[in-house]
Figure 1 (cartoon, helix red, strand yellow):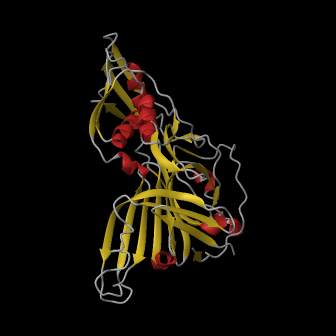
Figure 2 (cartoon, one colour):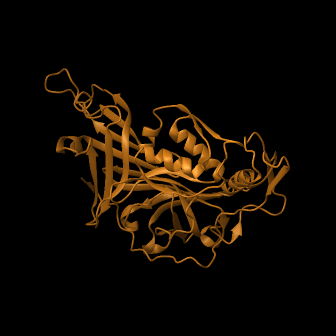
Figure 3 (tube, helix red, strand yellow):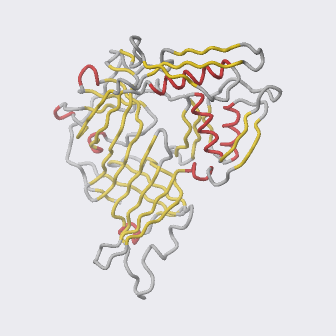
Length: 379
């Protein structure tokens, strides 16, 4: 049985044996749309002098202390799961032996981009250039996809009102992009500003009810058939003073199945207003982003057997599902993974999304080893 292990670093140092012995649980939330989060549950007690509490008064978890967690199965190299900064501590102190708990909450490096609100003009640049500049100012490695157009100051200029991460997420939303930071295998933090990478090689196969090959303990799926939309917008182009009608009726992003969720028959339509965009091309991009985002109508949730899967399931990447029937099997995009480490082992609870149903027959489902009992955690 492969052993599950994790490493914990606090303030740039490996956690001490005393700190590791106090750990009662570790939760890491890896999310495609929100900041990644870390929660540590630590047992605390009154110190020998009767005045201070262990860990709570030790000064280890001060504001924005850096905390890192990596995990591995068997002899594999530990894979970084999060590089975060402490934003909250919550103490529950009890007279009962073992009943006192300190919960430490930390957020990924985007918290460092939310400390200052500002008003800043961005003339003569594109949204992707703004993203590159802001991420570069925070020292991140860049993974930025180009956007159009470059706004001329004589016509229009982008004005930032808010923190850096708030501004970039607004720009990402109107371009149909993702905006997040992620720790890579080498330990460096990479900033991402690009469309979802739906064409990437799937990171593995989730096997549902396939005998000894099963690696999913639970799988639930739903299809929100009223969510998919088409989008219309009207605007006046600032440069030509001509009307710019926009009508988007189909998904431009890669379909992850054979049948689209945006119905051609009696679709639900939304009218976009108050966009603040003066270019017809920008309005088209926004409307397409609305339709592409709405098309994520199929959502699946479940629990992964980590030992059987053999590694961490990661958000913001495709994954294959097999054994869920012809409608629900196929390629999904991982929206959220909650990694939980406790005395019972390593549990990965996932939420997937999909913009189409059915299999394309181009999927290459991977074989998986037999499911095995959940291993205990070592540190």
